Each structure stands twice: as structure tokens, then as C-alpha cells.
Length: 325
Image 1 (cartoon, rainbow, N blue to C red):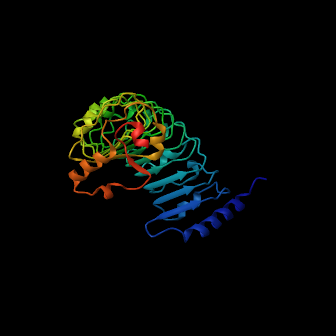
Image 2: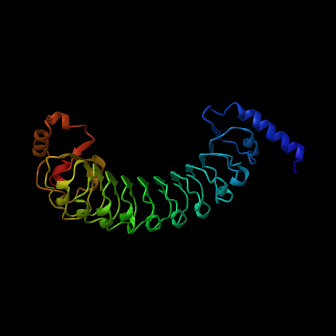
Image 3: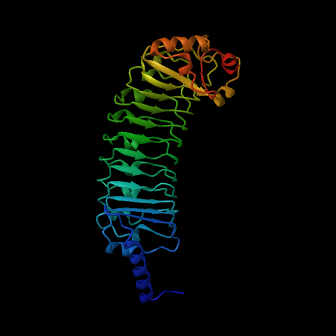
């Protein structure tokens, strides 16, 4: 039955009274798990700068007053479109994760955005984001994206999460000169040569792709590199890298020896990974785990016991058979 105007006003008054005491001093309001909530016009009577809405499945942006919101989060709300979001043209932070969004076109003029998350949606193309030049943090994991070329001009990007997509091509990413953290796990990447020009990269995660060659990283400033479960054959480029590296299970049948660097701390994998590589081929080198422990111990002034972190962590050197014994 259709509600009368007075009934609708009464509902808005009830919501206003309910939430007016929940607005924090900094202007933050959180609304969760209200399946009856549709009209958010009551918010216009509140001094809200940061609006976080979660698991309210009947709302739309057309029912949310924009006011002077700087932060907006709408997730787990089963949103399928972004109609009406363009009114939030002053937003600096926007989180639209865990919805059902396919098209990002309504975001194309949100030029003040610093941080954007559209993780866990159904996004296919990033073209609508191509002019959001102020973005420094972009979260696009768990979508249907095939390439990153549309965001090549977002040169202020510092952090990019793009795991669990269908990315095959990294062309364009070389223009992101300020990029420091890059997450590309679970894609279909074969060629990482564009990363050689990302001169500020310190954190790089490439697990479970189709990479065979990591030599483009030989002059990088990486502090952390993860390339578990790829097809890397040669690790000679690692001799110039620093800090912590995870290599895990390499699927290539003739992986070569790593040249041990004095700047390298340790390389490890889980016992689960070791179980997956119980095959008769050389994993990394003919060095035994014990002798390598001694070598690294001398490099870092650590005892062998200190390097033996736990039973679940093993240094992956020597043949797969030796490592699994």
C-alpha cells in the first residue's frame, strides 16, 4: 500500500531522531543493516561529512543528499548502477566495494577523489577513470578487468590493488612513476617489462600469474617481491634486489640457481607449497638448506636457530626432494 506524504515525513523524522545522536564530532555517520531504509533525505538535516552505509540493500544515490560529504562508503548494498552519484563532486574518498557495479561512467568527473575502491564488483573497463588525476590510491581487485592502459595518465598513483582480475597486458603502467605498491596477484600476466620503468616501486606482488622472466626488475628498488606459483626459470636478477623475497612454487621444470646477495635476508615458502612441488626437477640450486642457513646466518649475524622460524616455514633451496624430506 502506498504511503501518504505524512507517513513518509513521520518515517524521516524517526530516522532523524535515531541517527542524530550517532553523528560523531568529526561528522561521521555509520548506517548498517537497515533493509527498510530507502530514503536518506533526513541526512540533509544532519552535519555529516563522512557517510558510511553498509548492508542496506534498498538505497540508491539519488536518495542520498550530497551536502558537503568528503568521504562516502556504500558497500554490501547490492548496488548495480551509480545513477545520482555525480552530485558528490567534492568527494575525496569513495568506497563502493562488494556490490554489483559494472559501469563506472558516473565517476568520470569526480576530480577531487584521492582514494577510490570498487573491489568485488563486475567492472570490465577502467576508461571512465582516465581523468581522475588526483587519485593516489586505487583498489580495483576482484573484477573483470583485462588491462590497465586506461589509467596510464593517473600519474599521482602511489598504491594500486588490481589482483584477481583477467589482466594480461601491463602496457601503460610504466607511466605511473610514483607508484610504490602494486598488487597483481591471480591474473594472466606473462610480460612484466613495463615495470622496469616504475622507478619508485618498493612492494610488488605477482603471485599466481604466468611469468617466466623477472629480469626487468634487476635495477628496481624493491623491498618486497612475491612471485610464488609462476613459471620463472632464472633468478639471477635477484642478486641486485634487497630485503625480503617470496618465490614459493615455481612451475618451470629447470629453474636455475639464485646468486646469493649479502643484502638478501631470506627466502621462504610454506610447507603447503613444498608439497605441491614434490617433483624430480631442480627448484633453485643444489645447495642444501642447512648450508644455506649457515651462509645467511653469517651474512646477517644471526644464529641458525633464529632462522628456523617454525616448522611451517622452510628455506626453499636444493632439490624439491631434499626440501620435502
